[in-house]
Image (cartoon, rainbow, N blue to C red):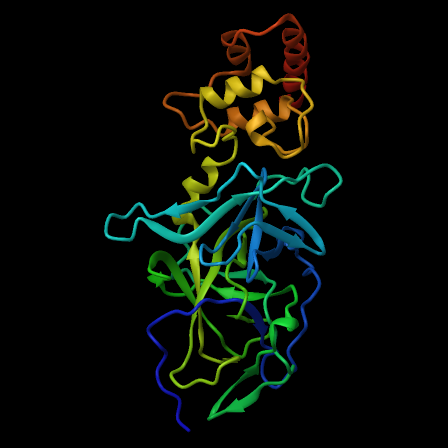
Length: 354
């Protein structure tokens, strides 16, 4: 039968299907790629999606993913903090819906876990839509049943397995045409990637909403996109992925300022300012429950120390410049024991900067 045009609506994307290129069988790609952009940061988010660990306890996924309370990476479960209700990202353009299909939630990352101590991810600061740049996507969704494409009514593609076929895999996606896509009644500034029979090229399918797309800048990887929806042919059989299907990817440069705001935000008011600094200083030197950022532990390691102070100061977004560490210590009243700890921290801070 003849296949119709691509549908105008965008169902959720939730798996990675990979092409082999030409007549070659598709690769499994179920271990980290040689040039790894962040394999150990990606896992199953909630009950039906994928998420990426940004750093400082924050996980980014799609808003429409259900039960966004856990991130499971290679068998290790990270649980959302009881004090965190999650945050939906917003659109700045007044012509778009207020909220978008992107969601942040915060988990504990105690010492001894795989995510503990990881630096925050770099977020692309330039819109990628239409650039043609190729990125690496990592997803945890359903996969193809066969490694060799089969024919569906005149179009080549793959059968997609059931929910038990979920597996973390990687592939490549291109930053194609820029466009705004409506997903679950929320607008997303995005770009599209067309699924072609090119070696290692990936297509989003069931249970991969929230999959990150990383781009190599030459000096390191940046997080530049997040899979959230697909478009398929009219009449296309369910549980299939066909060449010329489209995956939609949120352009994270559009939402970069919001994502960066959360680094150093100890008080949870979506600002990094004197309130966060005062909290870190007042608890400086204390042992706290790992991952409890509201106790001043911005890095989630169970200690309030120079790393937490540095996190606040380097992400300062209050009106006016951030104080120096010397000014910060001098401006907040502190007991004598705190003064001794701060003096030691200042010496350490100076050595590290030197």
